[in-house]
Image (cartoon, rainbow, N blue to C red; front, side, top):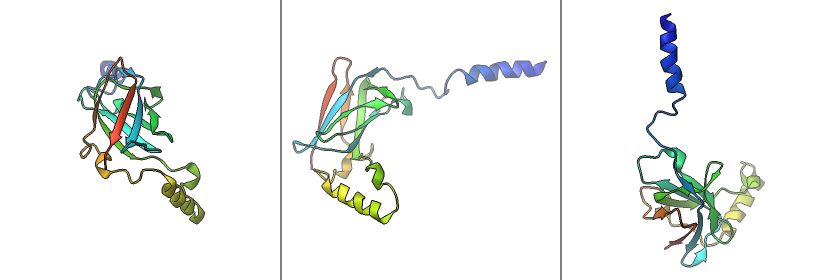
Length: 151
């Protein structure tokens, strides 16, 4: 009979969520346009991490820029970014699928691809949360956020 009393609290904890004190983010549509010295930055990985400790890793929005430096942010499969202040990091985007192997030809193609990217290198100060100075506040009534990087 005492086993039943132990199972009920366990099930309650199991269905109450992660239990890490984080809340679900309030998402809004957000597009970024990343430039370096006024020129678009293609194939860059952009990440928006909320500065509020109320959110966990389930609130990090990301996107990869296109040839015009534009990226639509999303959190997992949900389009949007977390409302509020976010620390922004920008680093190299993923290489094309066909260049992601240890094969010699794939490695040559990867090198050609990297060489073809415009506005490189991306300044390393933007690559990590501890070195970036980019802070952007996502607002409910705004959808586009320009990001101008400096060398």
